[in-house]
Image (cartoon, rainbow, N blue to C red; front, top):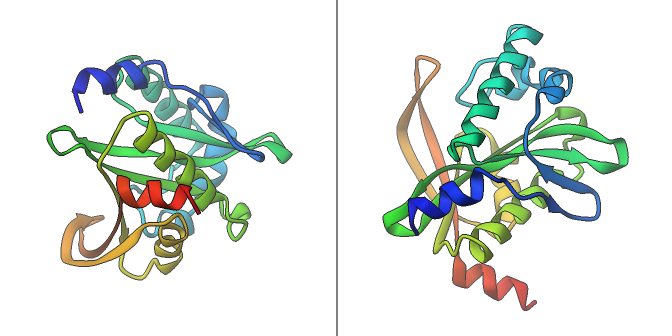
Length: 194
């Protein structure tokens, strides 16, 4: 995969749709919805970032993201739950390893919407995009040890748990053990025939 493809695709992020979700660019208008979940310690407990301290921080972050989209250097979609017309989280790619046709994905969902299968649905949409549009060979996701619900989301979307990397990341001043799940293009294609 070439970096030029990533720039071309993500500088004009396409919208993705399912029956109940729209995945689209993050916009400044999403600040109230994003702050609603991004300010919560229970949301960020297993994430690399700390809770947003105030609404101004969230607005500034979304302005920054707008510039990253323009540069083709931000790979997340806003998740809009259509029955409520509400932005409830994000899902997308965190990084690409172009020489290996590999990418990593991540997601975060407002806790008010946990337990409805939304994270798995959004993740499946991103996997489909990665394999069909970007022609990736492998997509992986990571979760901090203890965050079994996130591992369940990955496995529900067809990913296979590969194991733990002991104290592999320094997050919020602590070394954390990280689990890895992945899916290959051939495995994804096989799931589509079932």
